[in-house]
Image (cartoon, rainbow over the protein chains, first blue to last red):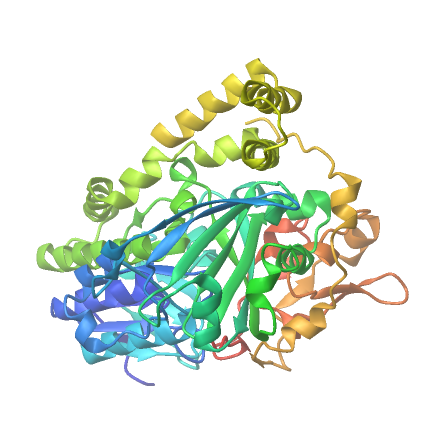
Length: 438
Length: 111
């Protein structure tokens, strides 16, 4: 019989949350094993996406010297409000975004996560890939004392396990920390295609001065057929990331095929010219947990903490997730270090993790937007109605047909009234305000 | 919490959706197929036969679920990108879903 494998801490999942936790604990002197089911860290991971460096800097202050594989700094960002044949753009471009390192970069997760996990290995973490954790090991009192994997004799023991297993949080559910499986109503299904184009071509099409500039656009309205969801276009070095996401329930209810919604968006007259002649490099899909603050799993149990998508730490409104995950992972790691110092791994002690998060932007933001998913839930018409209106209004505003301006203003107002009653508008505004203010 | 009220899609919008062959899209995805373990399965075939809508045929982003000539739902787990939609989206929770064994399944090159 082989010797029992014992570590100071086990981390399940080598995504942003898991790696941040592993690095934090290793730097604090713990012996850490990081288990990843993919062939390499990042093989299973997929996002839009934009990465924010503030969270990375707090995990790895010298991350910039370690040459992270970013795509482009985000030097221009904003929104497109898309109607079937028009667009109104709200874009912000600034020299301030050009500091190096920048606040945000577009990135691709397979190379980025692999790099991030490599940094953990450099800090002394034992990274084991191609290993799926199938269950948690518990003692007589139900306390988590390790994990079992699909490797022969694959049980691993530690006084603390950090679950960073991603959105399909089967282990978190098994422990009873998540009350239920993901509700289709509060989880978005996103699909993305990576379209390869020469760097020069991307820069010309998006008006970028060179590799030191990049754009991140979130798109509302016709891209999702006016249904609750968003689309995005992000510039990478030599590719464009283009995707669309809707609440899963919308796909189910309307019998929509995600790739057809994406194809329709790609063919939109405003979008098509950006993609012309590009080569499809990769397609993929991912769920985004948008349950919000009030439907999050418990974050701590006896001998266990949960971080990242597994704990639905996503701020959908600001398309933030990896930064919440990294920050939560770091705080889980700090809590585990403290638990080792006090030799107390009880749920009561580990709840300090939640208190740390409550004091950080992670739970503050999630709390502020706790009603945002409910807002979209209760006003599914919102996107279609107002975005088409804004486009029609812009058309009137920018046209000169010899119509007196007063009459033009009247027409714009009439367009709005056709779509929504005064009472309806007031209700929508109230709900939106509540969604934003928390 | 009350159920959401869905408005049916405008038929014009619906007609504007292009037909796409999803197999063309997934040709770009790298997989390591586990021939010995199907990590997706139908729990009870009788439930599928009674399911009128069969939304899994549409919402699965890689078209894992297709009908055979007899109208039975086939599970092409080899194309799965492990998103989890079918596990939670099946109206009867009739889809068995496990993680592929370590190292198998999708391996994004870019992600």
